[in-house]
Amino acid sequence: MSVEVDPSPAEGPLLTVRVAQRSDTGRVRAENQDFLDVSHPRDGVTLLIVADGMGGHRGGATASRLAASEVAQRFASSTAEDPRLALVSAFLEANQAILVQSQESQDLRGMGTTCSALLVDGNRAYTAHVGDSRVYRIRGGIAEQLTQDHSLVATMVREGLLTDEEAEVHPRRNVLQRSVGVASDLEVDVSEPFDLIDGDTFLLCSDGLHGLVRAEEMVAVVEREDPSESVQKLVDMALERGAPDNVTVVVAQVVSESGSEQPVGTASPEAPQEPRSRGSLWRWVLFALLVLGSVATLGLVLQWSGR
Ligand code: CA
Image: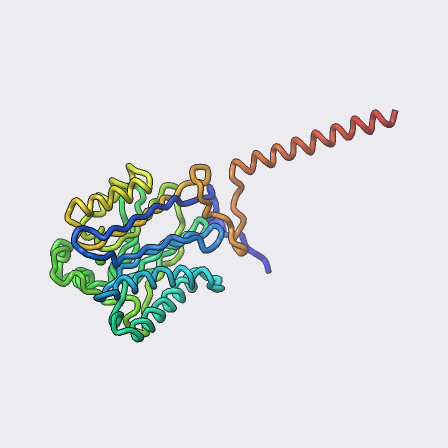
C-alpha cells in the first residue's frame, strides 16, 4: 500500500500541547458534579474531556464521571482508523454505560451529562460534543466557540427568538435538548479535522465558567498567562462572581516542539513523515561528521599499513 504525502497539515514545525486543568465546586453547590479527564491514549495523541452532570442525589456526579472516563477508555481501546469514528463510538458506548446504570439504580434514575472533547492527534485536532459545555479556540486574540450549545435558549437565539443578552438571564437557560445517558439514541456532533497553529490555545469549560466569564475575558487571561496560571485565574474569576454552579476549565496551549515537554505530534503509522526538527538535524550532522572522520582515519590507517 502506498502512502501519499499529504502536503497540508504536517508541513512546518512539530507541535505539542501544554495542558492544565482545574475543577471547583463553586460557592453554592454542595457537590461537584463536573468531571474532567486528560489522557494520552497513544504516542502523540492527547484527549481532553469536560463533562457536566445532572440528576439528583448521586446521579449528576456519576453520569459525568462515567462519561469522561468511559469516553477516554473506549477511545483508547478503539481500533477504528478514523479518529472521528472512534470518538463517536466512544460517546455512544459511554451513553449506553450511563443508561444501563441509571436503569439499574433508583438513585441514579434520569441522570445525564454534557460531554465535550478535544482530540489532538499530531498537528491536527477534532472536537466531539453533546450538551452545553464548550470548546473554544483562541487564535489571534479572538475566541471562537467550536461547539454549538444543545440548549433550549441557544436554539431560540439561533431562531431569532432571543438575543444573546436575553439568553444569558433566561430562567430556562439550563434546559438541555441533548445530553449523554438519557436515551438509547444519541446524536454526537463531531468536527472535521482542523490544523493546529503554533500559538493556538484551546479552552474547554462547563457552563459554570462560560456563564460568568465572557469569551473576551478568557482571551485576556490565556494570552497573558501560561496554562496553569490561566486555569487558576479563570476559576478564581468565577468564584469572585459568586460561582452558583460547579466550575471546570481545561486549557491546552499549542507550542512548537522546542518549547514544550509533552510531544503530541509523533506520526501515527499511516501518517506522512513529519519534517525533522532542528534538534534531530544536528544529530544527523554530528553523525555524518563522525562517519566522515572514521572513513578518513581508516584511509590513513590503510595508507600507513600499505607502506
Ligand atoms: Ca453546570
